[in-house]
Image (tube, rainbow, N blue to C red):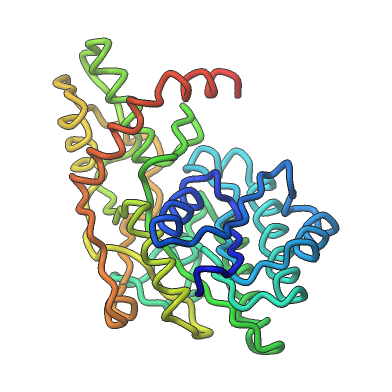
Length: 318
């Protein structure tokens, strides 16, 4: 990418998109397209096509998506599959038809089978049943990834797909019911620490193993891949490190200053038992994450505490 190229960050107000914007600005890219959903609703084919005809971006980071945790995925499956299918289909097609030099589609590690062999290699895709608690989201992401590959195969479009692991960091969603595990735990333990609650109960058995990546590391990897990777096969983006949900909760409790008891509710779903990405292809290209989990959680907690009053007001309105 050249510093004068016009770069679209779709979904720039979200967790991933805002991190990509920060990373690009840090590298000196100033010609950024940062439309809001009010500027262009990517679920709308006509409006998406008109936006791309007007702006004609050279590069596209497709980070726009409807996202949420287990509760949100289970409660709104139709919205998750519809919104994410339409975003992917409209944006990829419009980018191709308007001369985009390269597009990076961002998927999710939930595209892989529930019981995929660990660590999960890229070739494990579609080798078994998906996790039922987020299969609609996963199917939409698989379709977007396959569409990017199809446009490469049929039209020669330089479209690549990256599959990030579980993410957290500044700009995350801290909604009381619709958030992912890290922001949900940060919010709950911070509130418990301030109120002096004697205990905090977390969903599930606490045994599932997860890999967590700070979103600034993902953003760095995305820029690296845009400049150094071009292949039909999607590529995993993770840390290679994993932690149990129980261990994660204990670390967040410590970092927020919570000293009460941590209880488990095994009647609630665990989700996939283990999910660790094999990132050997990415690491072989010369990229490695730089933010360890404890350092990243400290950063995320500090950001949350700086913004929690605004986040609480927003959550109460939703």
